[in-house]
Amino acid sequence: MSLSRTTKLGKITINNSVISKEIIKAASKVDDKVFLSNDRGKLLGNPKRVGTGEFGNNILIEEKEESIHVLFYIVIKFGASIGNCTKVILDELEQSLKTLFPNQNGIITIKIIGVKSKNIAPRDIEVKRKYEVR
Image (cartoon, rainbow, N blue to C red; front, top):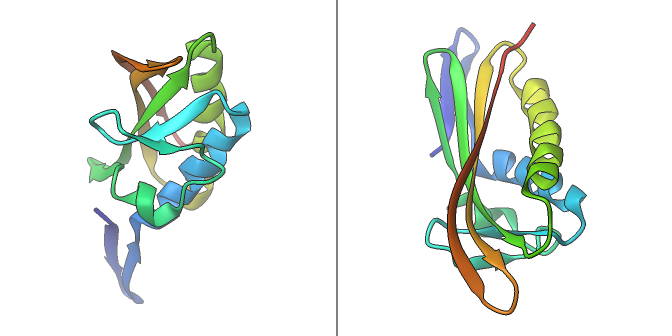
């Protein structure tokens, strides 16, 4: 789903691929500890090798009450710290979204669908961050 806004200059549309590119860039910062996924736990691969078109269909972006809600799915590598990995991703993504949308608050949700060792062990962990613009 893309975000659209009509102003006196015309209609502005931001496609999913713009947001997915920022998510991929943020997920690449954790050095092979995270794999991007769809909502059913199918691995899309290492963030450094996933295309924005492929991943763009697996994120949810909504605009509600003057805030932007972003939801995406990951599988984390066994032994990696969930707290540390999600903190790095959320910090990077928050800065990117504040740059893209300087006048809007946001909520970023990461759903950890599984933990990968030899196989993927299903999990249902949700990490959410709310931020406000100053």
